[in-house]
Length: 345
Image 1 (cartoon, helix red, strand yellow):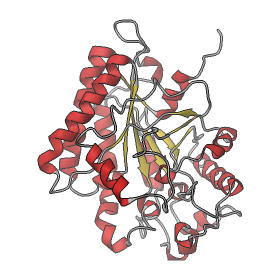
Image 2 (cartoon, one colour):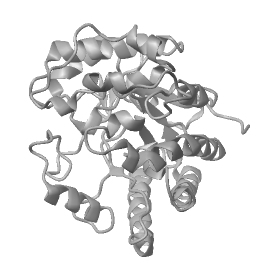
Image 3 (cartoon, helix red, strand yellow):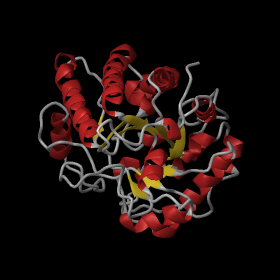
Image 4 (cartoon, one colour):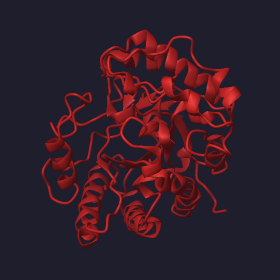
C-alpha cells in the first residue's frame, strides 16, 4: 500500500504564490441501474462484469499517483441482497411521464443477493473503495433519479436522496458530494441537497454541447459533437473556475471532460484526445483553475488494458504538473472545502 496524503497535505498555492489548481476525477458507479432504460442486460453483460474487475485496478492506479477521487454510487448498490434493499425503499417514489425511466417496476427481476446478481447489487464494491484512503464515496441518487424528466417532483427527489443518505450511513458514510444522473442538474433541487448535507455537486459548463437537458431535448447531433470535441477543439478550453464557486453551497465542481473509452476504430486517434486533455490540464495547473474528468467504471469494463494505459498517461501528466505547479488531485468534497470560506481561527 502506498502512503497517502490527506487533503490538508495537498498544496494550496503554486510555486509563484498563486492559488494551486485542482485535478478532479469523479466516477459514476451505477452498474445496470445506469443503463437499464437504454440497454438490454444480455447486450451489456461483459461491460458490467468487467466493471467489477476494473474498480480494484483503478484504485491501485489512484494509490500509485496519490489521486483522491470521488466515487458516486447509485443508492441501490449500497445493498448486497434483495431483502435489505426492499426493506429500505422510500415510501415516496417518482412517477415519470415516461415509465421506462423508473427502475421500481423492475425490482421483481432482482436476484437474491450480490453473488447471484452482480449487475444490480454493489456492497462489495463500496467496501473495496473504502479500503483505499483518500477516496470519497458520494451520491448518484438512490434510484438513478432523473431531475429534469417530466412527472417527478422536488419532494420525490427529497425522498430519494434521504433514502440514499440512510443507505450510506450503513457504511458509516455521510454523503457530501452528488453527481446528478445523466448530468440532469436541476438548480431548484440544490437546496434539498444542502439540507441533506451535500456540499459539492458536479455541474455542467454553459456551452450548448454540455448544457443540462432531459432525454426528449437531447439530440443525436449534440452527442456526436461532444464526442468530436474530445479530439478537436469545438467548445474552447474546458478548464473551469478555480475550485468551483465558493459563494454558493453546494459548490459547483463543474465537469470539464468525459473520458471516453477506447474503441477499435478510435485507437489511431487516442493521441489526439490525450493531448487535448493534457493541454487543458496544463492550462488549469498553470493558472490555478480546476480540471474535472469523469466516466463510468463500466466504460472501462472491456478493453481494459488499452483504457488503463490511456488513464496512466493522463495520471503521468498530472504527476508532472503536480511537481511543477502544485496541481492537486482532490475529491469533489475536498474542492468544496477549499472553495468555501474558512472559519476564523
